[in-house]
Amino acid sequence: MTKEATIVYLDYAATTPVDPRVVDVMTPLFRQDGDFGNPSSGHIVGRRAMEHVERATGQLAELLGCKESELVWTSGATESDNLAILGAARYRADRGRHLITMPTEHKAVSDVFQVLEKQGFEVSWLYPDHTGVLDPAELEAAIRADTQLVSIMHVNNETGVIQDIEALGSICRERDVLFHVDAAQSVGKLPLNLASMPVDLLSTTAHKVYGPKGVGALFVADRPGCHVEPLTFGGGQQNGRRPGTLAVPLIAGFGEAARIARSEMQENRAHLQSMRDRLWRGIRDMDGMLRNGSEDHSFPGILNVSIDDVEGESLLLALEPLCVATGSACNSKSQAPSSVLRALGRSDLLAQSAIRFSFGRPTATAEVDFAVARYREAVGRLRDIAPEPAP
Ligand SMILES: *Cc1c(COP(=O)(O)O)cnc(C)c1O
Image 1 (cartoon, helix red, strand yellow):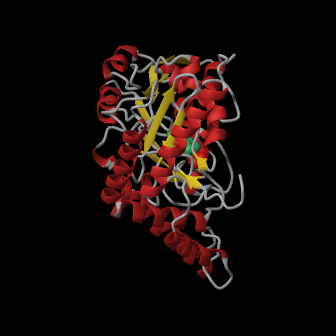
Image 2 (cartoon, helix red, strand yellow):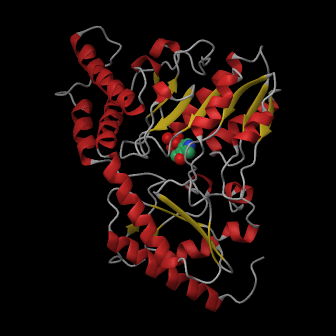
Image 3 (cartoon, helix red, strand yellow):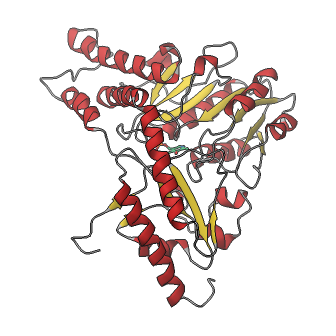
């Protein structure tokens, strides 16, 4: 693009910028004249660093409605998912080796289950209906006597579809099966109260809620039978559940991001919803337009649409300087159609034309209007120049 083109970023589900208030909390913690210490050190510099970790743990626990002792700091949702699934499957392996998940999960979940399948675990993959929602009766029917773990995400990162975590978790609890939830897209955006929810393990990350990249947490419920085997070994930090020197500036940043998300959740949600609805109103009348995923059970920050006769990668280029996603950013290296959209029953061609718009706190009405105009114009242009069917 030319230099003067102003970038319009509608890809907040891939990552968010760091809130300036979060940056202000983090920067002193890198510096000699700030609290740069190792929180494992017993001296005053170490103890001061530990105070920042403790404050952040309290802030995240308040956001999630859990105990501080139930949180393990990690490097992000990918590590949290791996620790939860591998750790719990291994911990309960002698009781049974059957696990349940969905093909619509993020790769940080589904790839872990594929590894476990190779290691002798049996995995049932439950399909949602054509709107992306899983019927709890499907889960009920899939649970067996030897089932140990179910992993189902809260908000889908490609479509924004919300699963009924309460209903699914209750079924798991009745049958004494551990329930893991990847909540990378929902933490800080939808209310969660883990003290009263039937969830055993929950993955979070900071960089989707205006915190820094490279830090996350895993919630491990303090109840009998719920435990994860560690994946790494070392200095014994975090009760050995995830050893290694705590990333104090990142953790403090996540804590501040959690505090802000909690205090501003309602107004942010209303803002996302008005931005998303405005975009949808602007494009819904186009020929061959299809919205992917349930409209009733959806997170207001994501809109995923497919359109006839247009290929997603070309569309992405034609949309610049509008930054949006095809499939998910995490899958963008592969040209394969999104497995999430295929699981919703979309054809390869329609799945390939999918564009995910995702909105954030900074999104302005003018940006949405720009996106509407750009999308309409780009689709029209591609349809004009490409009469040949895609291969
Ligand atoms: C972004 C995301 C992840 C990966 O999180 P990282 O912190 O980048 O490792 C996992 N699951 C979902 C649903 C996500 O949206």
